Amino acid sequence: MAPLSYAQKRLWFLHRSDPDDTSHNNGLVLRLRGELDAGALRVAVDAAVARHESLRTSFADVGGGPVTVVRPARAVPVERIDLSVAADAGELARWLVADRVGAPFDLAAAPPLRISVLTLGRDDHVLCLVAHRIIADETSLDVLFDDLLTLYRRLGPAAPPVPYGDVARWEPAPGAARRVTPEHERRRPAGAGQDGAEQDGAGQDGAATVPALFERAVGADPRATALLCGDERVSYGDLDHRVALLAAALRRRGVAEGCLVGVCLRPSAGAVAAMLAVWRAGAAYLPLDPDHPDERLAFLIVDSGPRLVVTDDRLARRLPPGTVALVPAGNSGSGDDRWLGGWAEVSAADPAYVIYPAADPFRAVPVRHGDLAARVRRRREAYGIRREHRVVQLASPGDDAHAEELYPALTAGASVLLLPCGRTEMSGAQAGDRPPLTGTCRHAEPAIPAPARL
Image (tube, rainbow, N blue to C red; front, top):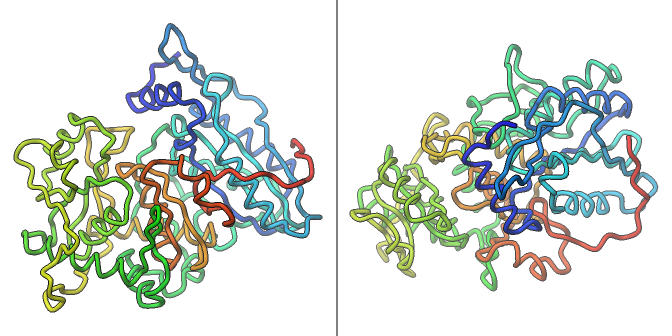
């Protein structure tokens, strides 16, 4: 029994206090095109999970504290659901995926990992991988997925199924030894995994940064809804104007290229505007989670040294002495549009934000614009995010996953549903809507074929 890391202990205690909370579930859902060999997939799944010890780990409660229990390598259950005879197979698959991503895990009973394959047609399938963050984060799921398809390629048909619109990333880089680890640090080299196939799929977005793609979405339809937060609806045009006003306020306080700016706000339109405004001013942001203890916030601020922190009146009182706080008013800019200025130019090598990963909570890791843009493109293509979609932001502000929920939507012209009070707002907020592309909104299941096991 190996000891748990600091991050794992925190996640275990959070889960023990609320076993039904699924905010720490991570899901990777991909559409596969081509013939699927069920036997080869079963063997590939078993081999991939056997390779990664964390995916075979459960967490027992011994004397009121957690201990890890590593299970021996064995056959892994893979749920298979055949929707090929359903008239609305795509919508049923969407509902089923939301349910599986949103189902809680029992950390003690078994390793918190579930794998499902939904068949929409002979050459059309959906692969759904869900894991609790205590054993794997988003990047770790990417590693598992890469391993799965590499192993399957050796066992299955000569032409294996390919992730639709996400061709480039399913084969690991030659010689790259990678391992699934809990709370894996989310870093990839700029442009990693982008060969000609993905460039064709990305089209003209291939070399653009996230700020440039957001500008493009604003120009495409400024009246489209960008953010929904309670009763508030913010259009792309309105959001862009808020960003311009706040960027002007930042510039007047000396924020420019090379600066770091903290953002300590709860999920809100103001928080999104603040992060974008930092980019517009040419700087990088440091996301600060208001739910963290004051001591943790103080460490992050003192260690990283931001020029100032964008926050609100209440949260400003929790910041360490000497912190320069900017509390945006209704009109945060100069009041004169002539002084707003445009977007600062950023390159792929420039830092977009700085994160302290849970796996190494005392080390700052810069995430560069090139890396972020590549992740955003992969998410947009994997989920097929379009303007008519609504995406739920569930990740906390200090979690690197916030970027993978916000920016794929805001660069595609889609809407982001913000939940300031957490996932309790999910009920009712999505009533009558189609299930979200991300998040864990639960829906009553219609009659479907019974699941089968591989």
